[in-house]
Amino acid sequence: MPRPEVLDWLRNKFFPHMWCPGCGHGIIMHAILRALVASGKTKEETVIASGIGCSSRMPGYIDACTMHTTHGRSLGFATGIKLARPELTIVDVMGDGDCTAIGGNHFIHACRRNIGITAVVMNNNIYGMTGGQASPTTPLGAKATTAPFGVIDPPFDVCKLAQGAGATYVARATIAQPLLCEQYIKNGIANKGFSVVEIISSCHTQFGRRNNRRTPLDNLNYLKGASVPLVKAEGMAPEELEGKIVTGEFVKREGTEYTDLYLELIARVGGDRV
Image (cartoon, rainbow, N blue to C red):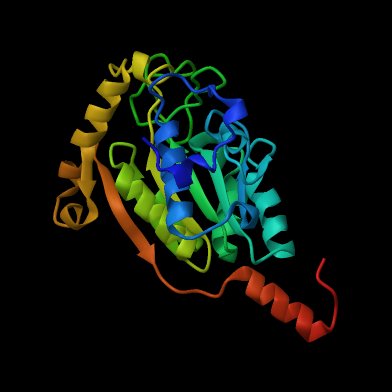
């Protein structure tokens, strides 16, 4: 049962939620709320942004300053808010398609700028809301409505993409590790810069029923069995890691945060912040 202080962050009038019973996104929402409470944040100083998709319905259920924006563009909206109000805590929730397909350029440039936003990428390897199409993270060989005989496109590694683009905090957990999800989100919020927390979720409705993981329990058991901590993975051969999900903190480094540079620029030219 959620703690009372976590329940205070919910918009009860919008329940029951629209997610399928057993969807992993509820676990992630709970982890986000626990992380915000543990970080001492208030609803008035917290922004939850999203684009379009199953995961992007989340701001409707959270009683904070929230934005449900357009597909793949939530980081653009969030960037504008952070530049105007850098003191706010901004968490941007997005799905794997929302983040790495139509939103791919926004994602890599937010990483490049190192702007103070925490991106929680809810990766269920599929376009769940719009019909089960393959996404940029669908594993090789997995079936989708657009790949009935199996995907042949190599998938993105979201964490490696974020690391290469310049994010200063990058971590991955799965919904089978809810406390780890909470800790990584909390660490991402504390980071002064762009943070990426990829959480491997599950969609038994669109992905699981086509790929021998028909129930929520099937998906949780799969994620438990496939997860390998980073410290262990570093000693494993590539063939041993095939099909595994490496979890852990991949990047923790300091960097100059973008809104600090923006404010310094304004002070230097003697203008007003816009």
